[in-house]
Picture 1 (tube, rainbow, N blue to C red):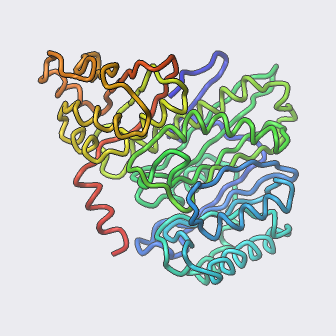
Picture 2: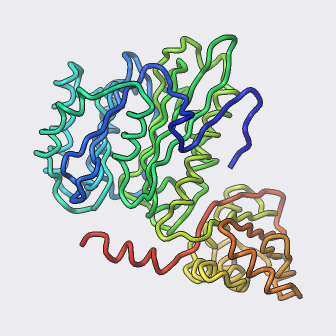
Length: 410
């Protein structure tokens, strides 16, 4: 979603080139939460005085770990020493028992590490409405805590352990130089379905060794998320567990204020890579669509129009069939609630103009079909209302998506 900034190196999805920030260790185990027996419990331990900032789901139904995570950040002035994540169970819609289970896990981790309970940040992902198998988690924690190490292998184990319907782990990292010092940012994410703007069914953990206050981190995180994670959509659903957590260990001894522009660019690069990886790994996805809306009155209006198109089942199923049915796109723009004038709307598939002034124009349908057959395709619409624009990464909707989600809980 962004080019590489000068003086910056980046890596995505490969343990051969991970830029591992100082001050963090990682581990993962199979606790038996997943019936498959795969890794399902992960831990990241941070150095003392690590600061943090987080953004959470906008869904009014939130999981127990989201409630506890918010409380712990407030209680400790946005300082975090440990992140504990389980997959296979969302611990959502589980009532007071879910809250107690989450707290019990945090308390056990804090006891093993000799930390205050409020310094533990919990996350969960998986099926909603099923009681947490907390006894399995508690039994696995001593092994998990003892296994922590600052290595690329441990990072990849962590990434695997937080996966649910993901088909592959999602990692990205970047570094930039300040004199002889390298500042590093590492991002680890999971997300495949229930992906929509205002975060998605995502868990994203961002680690850096820059020194920063929580307020500085929060400002940088909001900007990066607005340009990346809030500009993706797979299926239009917003999850109950969405979390993006940014932690700064300060181990580089370089303060963010001295390198703000470089840090913001590197953070955006990492988040942009993770966002693209999430969309590309969307459940049943065959085609990733780079959807641009131009000539809106504001960026927010352009996003509103783009989201209306990205949410349309008719549009998404047409993309699944590589059908250049531009009329569905036009109808979705008209259904957005924005007071557009259809006579000012143009639509492009790839480089081809397929709709001018809200009506058909001559175009090569076979070429448009071939364009939509590609794994990645550009769709562009202009609405003639102003000079603002927005870009949204979205996907088709396939029979495989239906199969995955029809069988999810059984």
